[in-house]
Length: 116
Image (cartoon, rainbow, N blue to C red; front, side):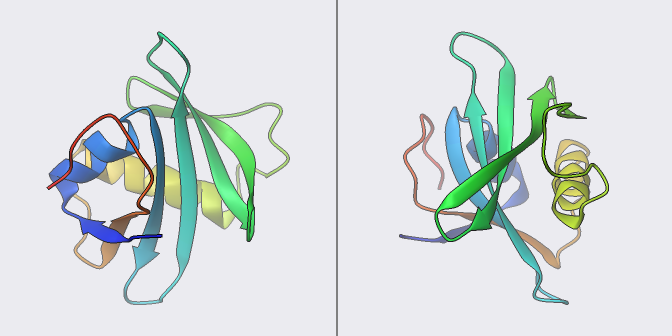
């Protein structure tokens, strides 16, 4: 897998390109979470899952028009650290205020946009 650190403007484009895998990393604490964001066909609805084991992702919620909604059917609590991290990073990216110590990494999966 090829990793690539994204700048803030490319991060939102990549995450919502249709079918992405990205890691959010805090360079101060070294905490990290890997997320898959998959677009519902012909829709502006995106399904969000978090990596919960080496090859397994668990659904946490949806994003529509830049707003995260925790899934009623999610087996992960809305108070889980991974959910809080996804919401935090998404909100900061939308506002273009993501702190420098929070990094978004492209995980080398194919998407429908080119990221420089």
